[in-house]
Image (cartoon, rainbow, N blue to C red; front, side):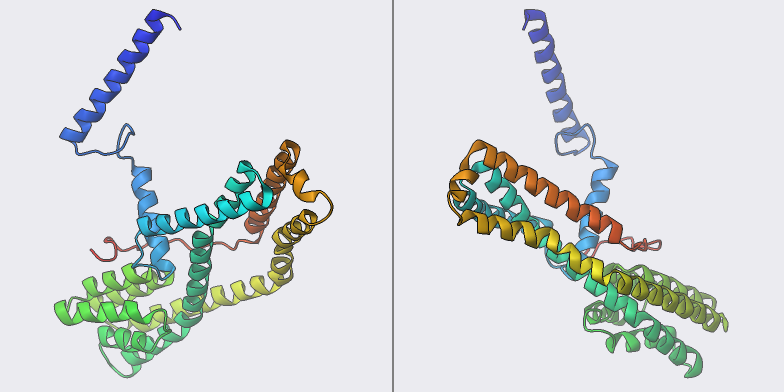
Length: 303
């Protein structure tokens, strides 16, 4: 590389270093990017919301990362012992490191399914207590929530504590929305807040319409899941069959030695890549539309 090019590169790096120091001192920015980045802040919020929806609101992202690192290390060592090569070990370790996220996604799906199942009944009970029995909207909401599904009770308990402290329905509902992080919960909370502030008999009509909408959505998802049951079962063979065949091949003839060759390592990587691609592709085809939160809480849990 010529001397002018080296000088230009060094000047560019020096200017970038001065920029980083200046923005850290003046604006309090951290990291090596040119700005804090709206997208990066959104990713942090999304991860936090994901953990809340999975029932892991007490788990910090750094703790999740630590578990992934431990699993990667153990699985990589196992992969190296089995396949006798670093590339395959890295792939096996990466697959193991994804287990916590996959488990959290499974928990999230189960909790959201339970919430979808419970909300039509809970909204009907709230409607009966608020309209027929004449109870106040906060009393009806918290009373029904205390008898709701086990996964939702901690959120209602936190909202109840907020209500006892502040007697402010807006803050109580913000607390409930932050702990549930559920689109239906957002819609119910906003409907109840408007009904509480405006008053009148419109709450009965609004809650009936919400019940019909939630029931229709729940039935549609059940029908779609039922049609996909066979395909979801067959999807498991994308992982089970190749892994089983590989383990059998290790114990036949010079199978283990074949895996340890450069060609064997390359073929193992190709096989893992194909398995991952098929698994992700099938998951995309089987994915049902996810509702987006429109009335998300303005504060994070625990703030």
